[in-house]
Length: 409
Image (cartoon, rainbow, N blue to C red; front, side, top):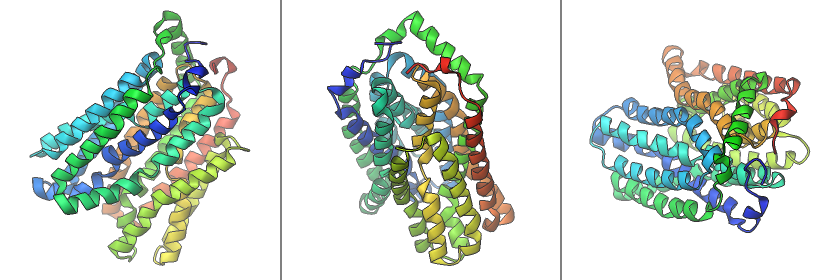
């Protein structure tokens, strides 16, 4: 071992770790995040609360995940992900069961507080940290791509599944089925596949001091803050499009069915985009690919108001934007790893993730205010600006190389 990193031999004998995390991320995102919109209507009606009040529960969940990003990152750097992700999977299942039994808005928010804690323990940030810490350098980028590629199907699988369950058994029993599925799949996989990935030597004073020094240098690096601003802006843009695209297209004259169908293609195109990015990654580092992806997305949304009344025009814009949909989930860990190395990786990721989660939670609310005051025709202008500025921020990091002393691969 070097600096407390698990030997590559530990993982070569258990190649199933990447497949296991791909499955758990798909199920975890599907149940803990993507299905919420399916339950929003029937749940609001049953609880006799407004959809806005009900939607606030997801905002609370995302904000809690963001608040826990740094402490969870520190835990992962010191103790690894085995116990944390296993416990988080169990907490997620229990929280979904609690969600199925709520009788008031207060109880709903408490249940989603639990989902927020569980999400911080089991979703991309934790999975990325585990893969970075236990895989040899040559396998890390491919493993991260494989996990995000498969997990990109979470919305495609679980949104229709949740809809079918709600129609057949009602929203409460549908949640119980999803909680059972989540528990049966994710808890055993995290418990078994992640055994031996904890890094005991990280508990030593030397290992902790080295991690803390690397984290401190990263936080003094101007490039880190440019990356943070760029990913905050991009995630805010993605969140606005995710939440408001259907309403925007309806306001442009499309039927709700056509609008929902076009918006639903974002997830499919994101998978295709990740495959293209995987090919590009053979010749170009993601640090150089990311600004171009963000620029293309901004251009697509800039053109949208001129062509949104025509299904073909809207489809073309959604296609281009969708290619970068979910790109940040892949690019963030790879870029941070390339810039700062393994030591303190999860903690550094946590510092970047905290404002990203806040932006993801609050940007749709800000967009709703803009739409209420100016209408949906102007809603996409902030998205265009955010994508262009994000591209600029990541481009500037090329001129601010990180100190080689930080990198402890």
